[in-house]
Every structure is written in C-alpha cells, then in structure tokens.
Amino acid sequence: MKILMVAIPNQHFFRWVAQLEESGFDVFWFDITDSGQKTEQISWVNQIKKWKLKWDFPLRTTLKQKVPSVYKLTQYINETNSNTAFFKTVNKIQPDIIQCFEMKLAGLPILETLNKFKNIPLVYSSWGSDLFYFKELGTPKEKVNAFLSRVNYLITDCKRDQYIARENGFKNTLLGVFPGNGGIDLGINSIVLPKERKCIIIKGYQFDVGEAIQVLKAIEVLPEQIKKNYTFIIYSADKEIKAFISNSKYLNNVKFKILERHIKVPNQELITLMSKSIIHIGNNLSDGMPNTMLEAMSQGCFPIQSNPGNATAEIIKDGFNGYLINNPYDFESISKFIISTLNNEDLINNAMQYNIQFIKDHYNRNVLKSEIVNLYKSIILN
Image (cartoon, rainbow, N blue to C red; front, side, top):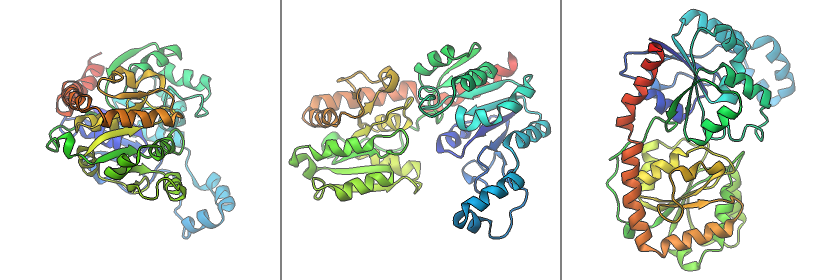
C-alpha cells in the first residue's frame, strides 16, 4: 500500500508517521513548504523535496534577505506552483491513499489537484486551530466547505472538531479521535513525588493564537513566597515573552529557565522537564487537544489549561484533575489557580494518580500504534 502524506515539517507529523515505520506500507511525504534537507527523524520515508525552485541561483538567499521586492518578482518565474508539483507527484507515485495534515497550510494549496484525483481516498487530519479558528485565521468559509466536501475520511484530535466539520460540509467517514502526534510515550521517566518538584512549566506561545503573556501577568501577582520557591520553565517561548520578562519590575527576582521557540528542544528533554514540574500551564485563544498538556499529564504535572470551544473539557474535569482557563485574558484567575493548586496537597496527589492512569488508558502510544495502522488498512478494505 502506498500512502502519500502532505504536511509541513512538524514534530507532531513526524511522530505520527513514526508509528507506520514497521507497518509494511510505502510512505511518501510531500513537503508542502519544500523547506530544508531530508528529515533524518523519518529517514525511512520517501521524502519529496526540492520541487519548488526551477533554479537555485547563486546569491538567491542574499537577494531574498537584502532586496525582497526584487526577489518576489523572481518567484513568478523561478518557482513551481504547489498544485503543479503535486499533480506530477501523484501521477508518478499512484498512491492508494492521500493524507493531508492540517487544512490551511497543507490541504487548500493542493485542492485543485486533489479534485482531479477523486478516485484516490483522501484522509484529513485536523489539528489544533485548523477548524475551530478558521475564520480568525483568514480562511474563507467557502474554501473550508470545498475542502471538506472532497475529504473521504476525517481524523480529529478532539470531539469538538468532528461537529465543526459536519457543520461545514463534511458528510463522509469519521475515523476517530487521536492525538495529533500518534500517542504519548509512557515510562520515559520515573515519577517524581510532588513535594520534590520545584518547577512550574509553561508553554510560551504568544504569536498568533498564544497568550502566554497573561500567564506572566499571573506570575507577577503571585505571593512572593511562591515566586521565591519555584523556578518557572517557559518552553517554545516567543520573543515577546523574553521582552515582557525583561521589562517587568515584578519579575526581577523570579527564577526563569527560557527555551526559545526557534531553538528545537528534543521531545525527551521537554518531557524530562515536565517530570520535574508540579504544574503545567498552557494558555491559548485557540487549540485542539494540546499534545504538550497530554505529555505533562503523563508525567504527573497538574494541568492548568485554556479551553477553547470546550475541547480541553473533554478530558479535564475542572477542579478535579486540572483547572480550565475559560477566559484566556483573565490573568488573575490563572494566578488564583496556581495558588489554589499549590495550597492543596490532596488535589495534587489525587490528580496525579488519576491523570497518569488516564493517559495510560487512552493515549498510550504503544496501544494506539496498532489502531493507527489498522485505520489505513480499513480504508483500503472499504
């Protein structure tokens, strides 16, 4: 079986594809961005790159940086349209299945070609803000409807997006709800007892749909004893986060460990940091089921998480195994959640036990692997 996947270079995509390495499938990846060299993380996949430029002329990068207006003119002549390149790819490979990971970036740019090959089943994996926030992201509703009407099979990372897809033209087969990265690795670290955890870990997205600055505002108004006793780890931190911390007179003496967004942190390193943290905080205007929250829960972190469209509420029972941020701009509530968590030993202990078992029962990567492989087999059988 040949599976042709279309996606941007993304860790969630790489980890999903890794589930298929020993499946016996021939897997191809059309890098819709045509960025960079071959990705060693999935070196066994047939990677389709270097399709965009007709001529990689000398000093091209310099021209792009120094004189972008002139470089833009060369693009009309020197760059191959994604539909043209993908049409050639499909003709050459003759895949049994095409799968698009994300709609706006991976699906819509090649919709014209997808409509020319309606005999090939199309699987669409919806991620995060893809469906929930499409209007705010500037995707016209008619384009969403057109894309969903072409989709034969849908995979989402939360139940919320199944309903949104139905409301916007999807009428075919739901394959189920799966984490966007294919599942959570269990048993990577031994579980550290809550009393030994002296860190609070925070997702640092601010650009686009993130609101990590509201978390920093929440830290500003925390009692001094908490600010003194804990180290705040901020991963995937946007430049706005570093600037806010530098300019805040209330955060001068707070201990921060900042991992910038443009520097790729190995997944194992991030999970190890989670295993040493008592709380994980994620605050966004839009999201699906956050993979990082699931990973943090597997390591015993108490989750304080935004809840766009009630997606997070599908697994977080507010005040039981986590806290739901229902207004991502309400930093005072976030601060109160932090204080309430740290002051309630029973809450932390009970949530830790519940969440670790919940992830084992529902998001175990080893268990999901066979289910994911069987999804593709079922499509061919149908």
